Length: 383
Image (cartoon, rainbow, N blue to C red; front, side, top):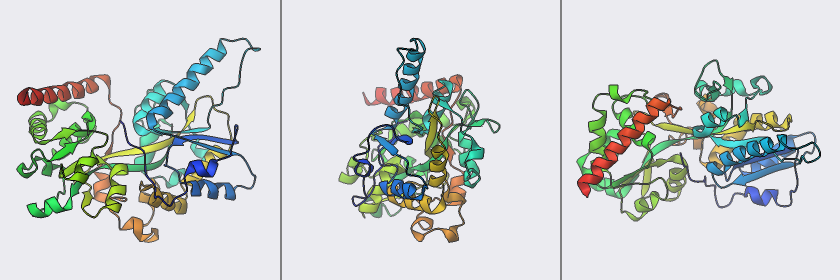
């Protein structure tokens, strides 16, 4: 899954500015997704430490680069093992790396990462069950309640419906759920993410099912509903899809909250809604590379991210939500979070929403085949 970089306010200090002048291997070395951790939080973390360690936070442009880093370290280690002791060189491997939940299964299967020790994480029990379940996996990367803890979620978001307020005012209604995409008034007036799991998934939600259905052939009317949806959509895109919404070329766009929330915050002509039947969830995670140097600062940093006050501040600055937030009593939350249903969805909608879990090979083939059939049928009709 590709997700565009997260945005922070123009007045916020950038991590690169905060870390300017830091050189060499620090006592805590983190490779993270750009703009997901505000520099103010790094500064606060450093002040809370009794010692004065070097903190090296190295931002990367996208999640694909971070996954590639894990793979490159593994390749280098394998090459080092083949050398003699006099030839070996020091490989600078981070203590923690940002990974999207979509990549977690492959990172486990390829032995790129190692499990975390939950006993060393004081705030692990503050994490709601939905996020604990997300990172408990077996050695093949599949969800397992008895599995090891392979990652620490630090922010999450949703798939949303963004729409033009002015256009829908003329229609006399506002979108509230996935089923609205099938309404005749929206024919060729919206875009969808170019992602099979997202498009098939939202159709499954319309039919009252989960995003993680393992046998699509047993879902009645799924193909016919997808055919109708594909006749409705104007185009598919996972990047730059909001530009058409801004210009009014489309009236509605299905997209990721980290793209949409900053736009909604700055433009009154665009609003967004979380579909009431439930939506797809995504999360960014801290993972520990397989051969990293152990340091107690690793667990301290993760626990720091899970402190309620820090979690609130990071959620507001990045416009993504800390996984700790849903477990906090609403009376203890700032109104900017508890009154923002896009940042903190209602509990009943969150309960009906799904992380996209890894699927078996036979199930993946079903999704691919159905997606190809639907897309091909539409292209043939329009050709």
